[in-house]
Length: 398
Image (cartoon, rainbow, N blue to C red; front, top):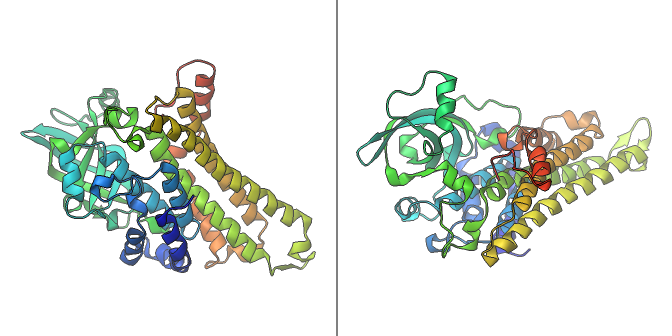
């Protein structure tokens, strides 16, 4: 698919690859790399045209994330995470859209949706306090979307009390706060993969948040926030098609990069046991099978998104079975692509272990991507099978 953003990414790809090791060493996305990604426009792909965005088909966005991740896993991950937030902001109150994009259409938003904060009602809004883990790209973002729970008094002291609050959909909210209200906790992202994403802990201490800068999490996930009347087809897409696949697109892109790295590594390699590695049927077969698996993951992700996009463009409800299939494919392709990377790495010999070789970094990045909660497997295939048999889903992220 041709798009000007994809063309720009192709041009900056070699530079992203050259910077990948330094991005990892920095433990965050450097300002220069973030500027390059802003200039290419990836984060504006899902942004409304009225606010300087492209309002592009979601498949274009996922292709862009894959294209970046194949050169630098951390850059692709941050592009995917930060790049989905304009989709959510588009269905929020116009006042917060004006605040975020009014002066700078390239304003970035980090996030962490875990309900780590408590919002106490005050006149005009909420007093907001909390601490959250895993806010990818927070160092280079201007705003942060945070998960919060509305409490009338003191927050619950027991896990049971928290569970009771979260069971009430009117209490769990996404809260949008400016970077000036957020403290980034240094030293909280010391990891073995996706090191350059800078997914650090963040904290907010008693910030005032106007009510219009909040949105019910259930409205976002359930697709009711925007209201379908006159809404752009892009914002009629289900949450489960947009947010989870931003993660998986990065993982598949990393796998594509690992395949390229494996080919470059294996080409001149000579085994003491069998001579030129290209004459090893075991290694060559493993590479061929991994290549097929990675490509099939890409095709499967884009296909199921395209099917949902067709319904959205016609203004028709997206069938529950298709939404469940989308989540099924999102999770399973993340795991299949990473298992293909395992095979590439397992057949690359001891030289692939050396720091500075792209293959070992991409191998670590792919595995780190599987640790995101969106890739937990237990419920998702079960949920699809339940829906396919005419029963209710057991996964709440459709």
